[in-house]
Length: 83
Image 1 (spheres, helix red, strand yellow):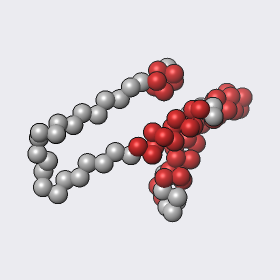
Image 2 (cartoon, one colour):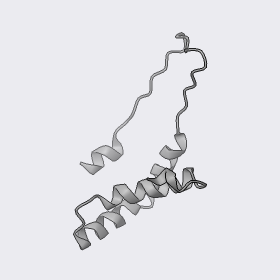
Image 3 (cartoon, rainbow, N blue to C red):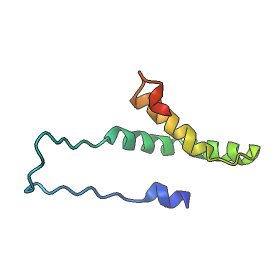
Image 4 (tube, rainbow, N blue to C red):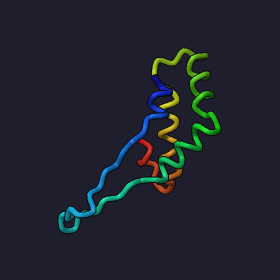
């Protein structure tokens, strides 16, 4: 199930002919996609999964630590961003 989530494609549709609402901004955090690619390229998720299984954690260590790392990189000035 984890491999399905990692390889799933996401489509973001935007219609250029449609007018946006006044003072509405649309942003996409591409940096998080880049960090996610690096995260899986270095196989950090495998290390966390192995550690989780070895110690018998009942929560997903990979999910928690990956979010913490990404928040620390993207919002490095804020400790609250990781919660």
